[in-house]
Length: 185
Image 1 (cartoon, one colour):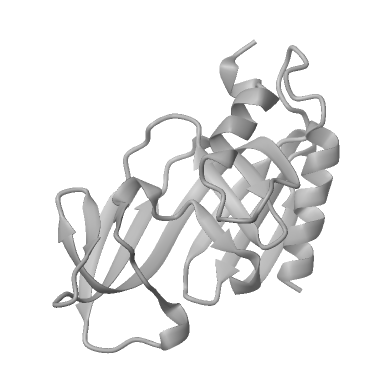
Image 2 (cartoon, helix red, strand yellow):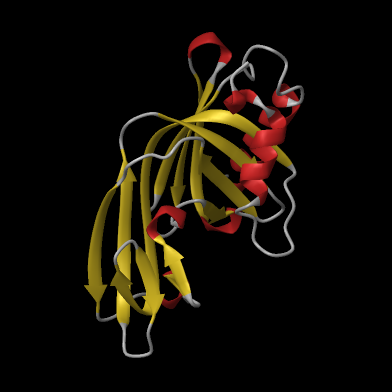
């Protein structure tokens, strides 16, 4: 059995990215098909692979994208959707300095964030729409559009891999689909 298909490993990875006060309610192994993340931060500067808080800094919008498929752990908490890549993946980044942006889309930055940590945790309240379609062999594709323009296309397989390492896969998959559909309604 691959370590990717281990509920214990999945929970360790997802728990490492939880916002304060949140707990994982459901998590599975899935496939990321497309990622277009837009995050806007205030009073910051880019330094190597980090965004660093700086009182003299500007509003910086980061566009992080990936069009190739990747293994991911997908989880939900009471208020968030988590998408954590199972392996280190490369992404395309664009940076834009803004003079103004809608306040509801700006995230404060304290003290810094690694570029690799952008696009992992998404507030469920920010989901604008979620289109769920059945595809091959019982899998489901979820196309999620967020209010800030971010977009995720995730595939949630019917089974959690061979070897029984993810015994709650079917139950958690159904819970994630129901939560995403309720948010995108």
